[in-house]
Image (cartoon, rainbow, N blue to C red):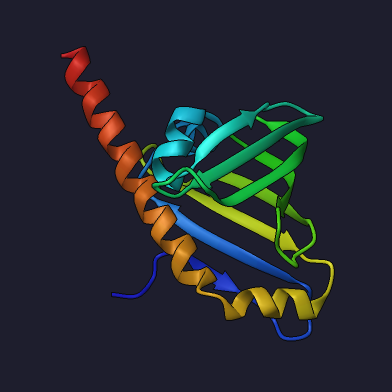
Length: 163
């Protein structure tokens, strides 16, 4: 089975477009990106800050079993429209990669399905290509698979509570 998350990286451009259709209502897909408890579950990282508003900011951190920081990322939220879009910067600390600009767009397909499109702009084509040499596509596909599973389980649990 192929990866459900698609990555389009045109040669010579300093951007990529990531798309994924989810078997989730639009509101639940958006919630998976803005509620810290849900973000932590599907991303497998600690949310130190997630201030979802224009001029807000965010910071995530992952530690190993000994408590050493192995990944830290942060950014600023430039645009925030519930169930529609988030525009933000993304910067991985302690890496050679400078900040990138991300445009996340959330789209309702049916009452039970939705689509996420992430347009990422890098400082240079070379930096984008360097990032694509990493297991980036597999990593984001795995994360999106976890997002689908975590949020599906949340809705099942929520539906059970309402019965």
